[in-house]
Length: 435
Image (cartoon, rainbow, N blue to C red):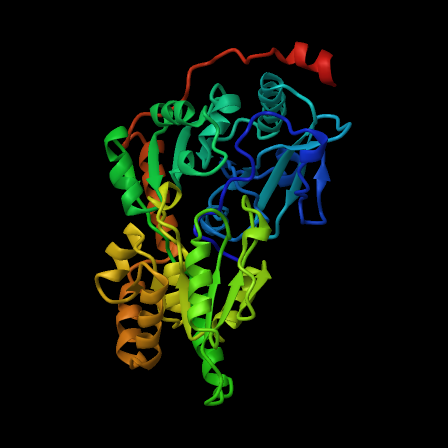
């Protein structure tokens, strides 16, 4: 499934205690533990794109997956996640090849390491990984500035910062993040932002920065329209079904949702997505709210086909200040009218043109939903289709690839290769301590 830029897996460079050990595991059964990506990929002549991400590949299907599966047409893509800490583990990489041409790599480290050793361990493992790629050209693609702590000194030909979120505003953000982002902006050749608001906030900090808001796989989500037309009409006594899909965390206004359910107990509300960084006991328990957990990206069109109105009840706080929800165009492509709280990018791109209804309170949500339920749909769908025709993930990747190409040919900003630097702990000392 897709989400509006899910929260990071683990910002901290400190290893967790045994009670905090990560339960995240690579979901692909064809895992090659200990093999470096060069061995998994083989003798490809493609350049390598090495992505450093705070998000797990198997968590939710969103911006990184949309872009990097397309990048795999031109590059051998190595997706490096944050480390997993395990009791008694010997430091190694687990590499899991994907059918779409991505190699997902997870550093697995012993619990109890101090922050300096966590950085040094990743430096050593990533160095071995890069050695396996040979001398082909390398693009480093960053989603998290935290990776600069262990990767800044490695040679690369192009540095890309795909700034999809203002991570410093998220719950649990490391105090080091802002300083490491300054280093990343100083070394990046090209910067992309995940929305217009984020672009406006960062445009003065880099000379080669470009806004690429959320795109859409129109055919995938458009299948919901066909599925809806094939299903029997609801009975006149059945209430409307409303829905949300995405990560459920501090960016969601739980109280607004609870109030909406209380105001209209005959309306069914489906909430689809993993719950992270908030206590599950804080979620409202009402007969007309169903917390359904995660689902596969391929299942979303079928679920959206059952919904009369989509909900985007985001809280208005620092964590949502710069978001550009991917689900907005996905709801629209599925032919599902949407009500959203006044998220800046949603208001500017979709609200002012009447494609999305904007409401701030539960009472306003009720009014907006009731209006959408009786509004003629055909004129709205015509407006939606004209809007969505302007953007797709294919066209977004093509534009990004062109900008990367101008750097590679010397037509853009200079190559952002950071100077060589000594790691905090040398490889030989680290090996003596932990291998």
